[in-house]
Figure 1 (cartoon, rainbow, N blue to C red):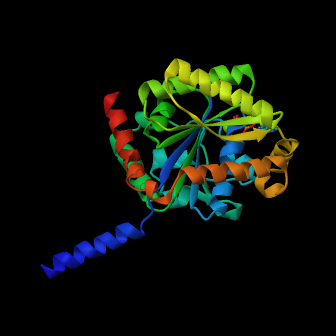
Figure 2 (figure 1 turned 180 degrees about the horizontal axis):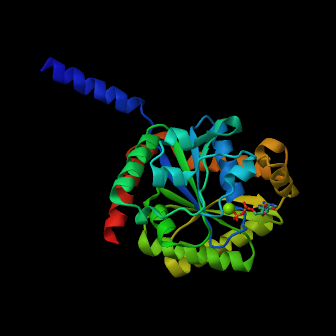
Amino acid sequence: MTDQAENLRQKLTIKQRQKSAKTLCFISGKGGVGKSNVALNFAIELQQQRKKVLLIDLDIGMGNIDVLLGISSEKTIADLFEKGVPVSEVTNTSPKGVDFISGGSGLKTIFNLDKQKRETFFMQYNKLVGEYDYIIFDIGAGVTEDSMHFILAADECIVVITPEPTSITDGYGIIKHVVTNQPDMPIYVVMNRSRTEVSGRKASRKFKQVIWNFLKKDIKTIAILPDDKFVSMAVMKQVPFVLLNKRAPITIAMRNMVKNFLAIHSPDTNQEISLSFIQKLKALIKER
Ligand SMILES: Nc1ncnc2c1ncn2[C@@H]1O[C@H](COP(=O)(O)OP(=O)(O)O)[C@@H](O)[C@H]1O
Ligand SMILES: [Mg+2]
């Protein structure tokens, strides 16, 4: 009896010590809106706020997180999916300690993997959930069946748009997809490349209104990010902009984004929800 009680106590202590990552998906309707730059710099700023962050490049075939960081990684997410290479071997550490997994080209979707490989991936992923506060996916633009499963299994989605009409309509399209399949998914919007704060606010208010009118979904804007020449300079130098220039308008706006994000997320809401990422993914695969 005492042994049992002791076992239980030990299990509880381990559980309390363990992290339980929240899974965030960065998505966009169309490419080229700045999603990868936003996701990467957000991840770095979040890590600077003493959160442990893992960034996973899931923009299959078009992944470029490693290029933005100027780090070439030998192993990619494809090795994890297809060859069952342990997460520790596919995970790279970037400056300032953000861990990342590179996107692979020619990657089979996880739904085309055999059952055993899929189970290996799930096991590996569950390990990660215990090690990080946040696991962030940079998902390719648009919707594929595969990426949609990841999106729907996530805890939250962050949609990156710009004030351009094409980005707005495509952003609407992807949100509609998500809301149709998962009405309760928390959705946050980043308005990137605003010419002014005022025009960015105006465009994002309009977007929010359209989403409410047509989809009856309440979305929250967590950042208005300026169009800033430092972004392209940072890309050229292969150094994330938050590290390249601490005073650039884009860096200040990104710091605010992280502040806004953390203000919405109190630490204890992180618990149980995200443990179910794999459960949700499994359920979605079964539904097919
Ligand atoms: N806030 C910004 N200000 C200026 N240029 C930007 C900004 N965000 C993105 N860009 C430009 O857009 C390009 C594409 O960004 P990227 O993050 O690769 O887009 P995506 O991942 O959506 O395809 C960048 O290389 C940069 O030149
Ligand atoms: Mg990208």
